[in-house]
Amino acid sequence: MRHRSGALAIAALGIAAWMAACDSGAPRDAAGPTAATVAMPAEGPSPSSTEVAPVLEAAAEPAAVARGAALFVQHECNRCHTIEGIAPPTAEFDCAGCHVEILAGRYPAAPAELAAWQSRIHSLVEVPRLSASTRLRRAWIVQFLGDTHDLRPNLDASMPRFALPAADVTALAAWLAPAAEQPPPAVGDATRGRKVMESKACGVCHRMQGAPALPAGTLTITLEPAALARAQQLAPDLAHVRTRMRPAALQAWLRDPSAVEADAAMPKIPLDEAEIRDVAAYLLQTPLQPTAPTPIPARPARLERAVSYEEVDARIFHRICRHCHSNPEIVIGDGGPGYSGGFGFPRRALDLNSHAGVLSGSVGDDGQRRSILAPLPDGTPRIIAHLLARHAEVAGAPVPGIRGMPLALPPLPLDDIALLDAWIAQGRRPPADATEEPPP
Image 1: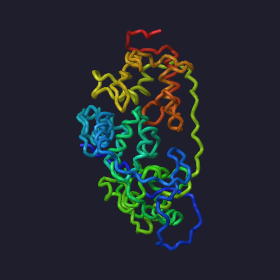
Image 2: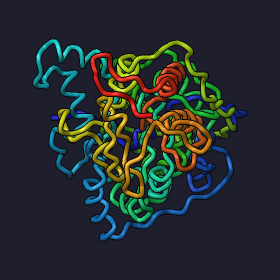
Image 3: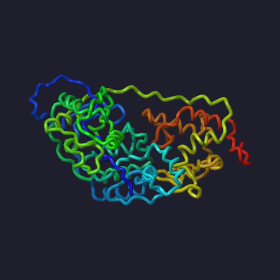
Image 4: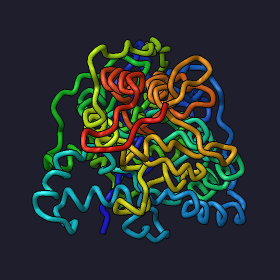
């Protein structure tokens, strides 16, 4: 059984960094303005502090909610997410569940093989649990699924950049946030909220892009090491709270996360009602400054030395790529979404589990096979372009027409890209024990 939690709406924790403002001098327990008047910045890597009053969301149409539930299965969201009310997939489709079982030692494999796998697993272990919720703004879900970004900076993996039709995204959002939004409650004082967050050591888990970093400090509660590690991994960037969370749900979450989500990764932080209002004010009102853009690396120079297929396979194909791009007749599983399709992507039949598979290429949009090693119009081999595009995506600048790879995982190191580029330029040498000749 899978145990992957961390509520989708965990971002509501009042923990992060700040932009100081002068003390307003208001009484300690005085209620401030309602959340309807707070800053609502544009979503993205560098939220602004533009004042936009949110419009309360009405209940979603029942037909859209029902269609959204069906789409969760159709688009294979349960490959990674445990979804309330939806059965888990069978083992061959259960990517994250497989990782959990391997790390727990429950996967049926020889001890030596199991130990080797355990040493290499680093992602898709802690994955947010999805359920119909009153916490998230439906509009934010639509925006996020249509243009994903790194929401949880302490996780290796991020949400994939999908290829979902707009109507499907709308239906998925309706299923995740079906209820009408409640009127926002009054909030407190943002400056006091900053001080509360300092005193509670919220920076142990959270960051808030666009605001000065909050020192970690010492937690005021006791957590088991495993619980703390899980909370830190799933802790979201709090810069997105103001667009992501419904303000009424935010205060309920701050009051007691486990009362909102039984398996919440965030612990209950002792806060009185005035402190809850103050922290909510900080999260919703603190001005966020634009952050410096992340540099996008150029294509690295190819290695000059001879590069073997064995080295490329060990460092790239077998270490990363084959988990989503493998012939299902050879590997355990279905071949992965990069072979069989999924997440809104068509079947590409790309097999990176062998030299022959690499040379066979993938199925293009026209249904015909194409080489992944041949150059694009700018001279960059297709596979190199996809690997470089992942660096651009992480920097917040997706490349039109090129999906970054590895999908939703950290970019491949530039040294590895240079290694692969050299192997391609040197004639795509076969394995030393192979008799096949590389194509011209």
